[in-house]
Length: 375
Ligand SMILES: Nc1ncnc2c1ncn2[C@@H]1O[C@H](COP(=O)(O)OP(=O)(O)OP(=O)(O)O)[C@@H](O)[C@H]1O
Ligand SMILES: [Mg+2]
Image (cartoon, rainbow, N blue to C red; front, side, top):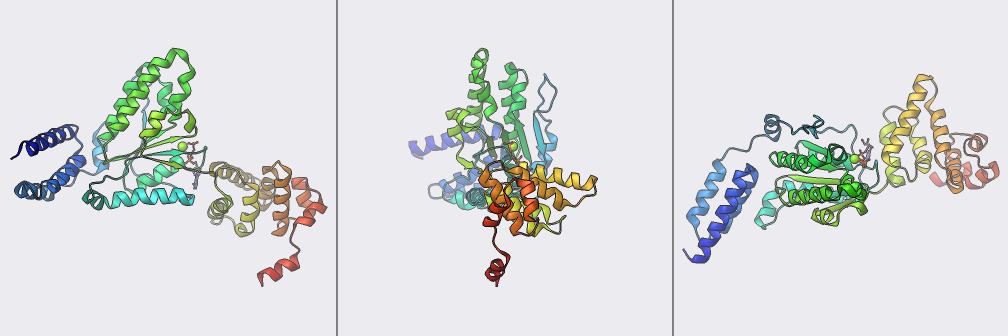
């Protein structure tokens, strides 16, 4: 064996020992797979033996079983569990992703499902992604969705909660949690990543925060390719650039556009409300610029009111639509949409939105013309 090959083998051996000692069985398998490939020409016997071993080795324990065996890390100060564990992540309705967000997730899922093809090309699947966007647009929901698609448990570490535990212990807490997450095959979401940065203005804590950022950076660097590390933030500009850079991909979640709002309304209301089709258009106009969770909250409040007062949901939705927009152009658009759909009279639309009837009349499509359009 030449000196070069020998030192290659020594290097690989040490790397393998390191991974094996950390207990990341899937990474060991990945590494052996690669080694077999690399030595196929120079040492066929070694390559064949490794391939046979890999075929014979038992599949790693189910992530759920393994996870149940390892106790959750607990912050000794608060005795609160630092991690929220969802062994079988469930969502009560499917997320509506903007096209570019959907494309990013399709890619992540496809990479995981085609790990062998990637490995043949000496590539690894994406292991970290940062979700950026305003509140209530589906960042946490997307993490849950991804874990469900990949049939893995979801671990959520709320950094705002970690930060509120005694700061002096936070670095240790964080390391503890990430070590635990690394040991199981999971999706880990670091939620509210900007919580670390938000404390930076407090002079007394600067040193501790620097240590915390260092821990986080080390842990992200050390994250195994078999796991999926996600981060979420509402304030990307507050994030430490070194942390930002470490996420392999950044996914921007926009506020829903009118088509996404209409789809969300249709999916939410259709099962419980027969007049859904007529309402989606006007409500989509009324909710322009709102997040999914704001819309969901308003709809639930309207439904509750209608239910306890035994009142028609239509009346509540009309009030809701009328009260959402404050700018003049928005109010005119809502009034016109309500009248166009035949949901309220021009007089009622004026009452709800404060827009003069003449203005409403000039913006609505005369019924006869509408019929001709649909002929
Ligand atoms: N893209 C979406 N499609 C369908 N429903 C959504 C979507 N985004 C949010 N929702 C609804 O709003 C709720 C809250 O969303 P989620 O917790 O994912 O928001 P977030 O982006 O993580 O917000 P925050 O930044 O406040 O944590 C969800 O449980 C879901 O019911
Ligand atoms: Mg969230």
